[in-house]
Image (cartoon, rainbow, N blue to C red; front, side, top):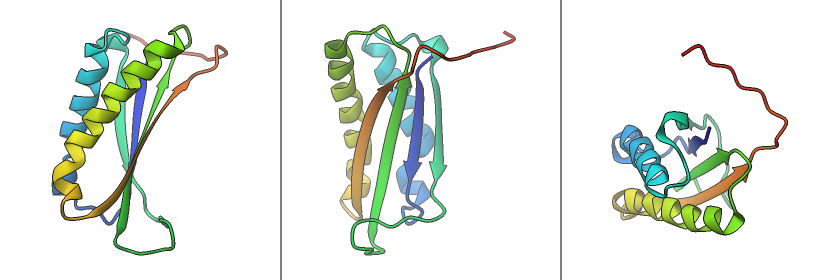
Amino acid sequence: MPHFIVEYSNNLPEEALRIPTLLEALNKTAVNTGLFPEAGLRARAYRADYQRIGQGDAANGFVHVAMNVGAGRAEEARQQAGAVIFDTLKNHMLPLMKSHKVALSFEMREIDTVKFNFKNT
């Protein structure tokens, strides 16, 4: 049940961010690592209403991707998959980063084993 959660600053232009394309690319990359089944993937994005980056320069932007994954995958495998996923994020953002100051970050968190899921499909 991996979840991608993308947060981004409100000073970055939506048309340049191409969020639907980014979500699709992140999902495809995750599936291609062989660690994450496509049926369990969830991806969403949120624009920050307010942000302060560094010393407060309004020209600075950010895109942060958090990936929450269930327990059971080896740390080395998660590290390798994370590097590939972060490369996908960087490649997607390169055109925007030519014209805007953007801090990129990615983290993969292992979800605690005490969790609850329900689906009706």
